Image (cartoon, rainbow, N blue to C red; front, side, top):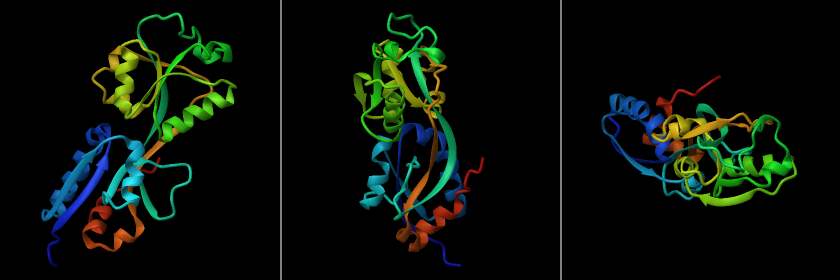
Length: 212
């Protein structure tokens, strides 16, 4: 069999590069040493659009509520979305988040993603309790949310997988908020038509889909 050779570009967040890429790239290098991988990192909110526009061949991204029909998607893991707060005490922090009132949340400075699934879920959560969130900052990328929350600027919403990989995890605490936010289904996506490319298909075939 002829050895495959060529380039594949993958887009993901910094957290995803820590969490998934080593195992994924190790498998690819073992099975297909002639395939070269190019990695681009950035805001996960941009991941699917980069694949749809042909900027990158694949992306590690949260699965949207309704995935575009042009994309194939393989789950890598599921991660809860969490409300995180600074470890220090602030007057705007709800004393009992699991039973806090809408009026209490109106006073909370929120640090949220500019766009993407976590922002959609946070907006839906606030709408469900009848509150327009008080936005302190809108941030590109979840890693920066952990930093700003740790500095005491407000409460943030991030996937647990981001917190698990953050060097600032000890500067924040998880709030037991009810109702809970949905889980993130994090996976690898590719244009269906790109799977006709033997190199892309070979990488796709190395990915074992997560099944809870």
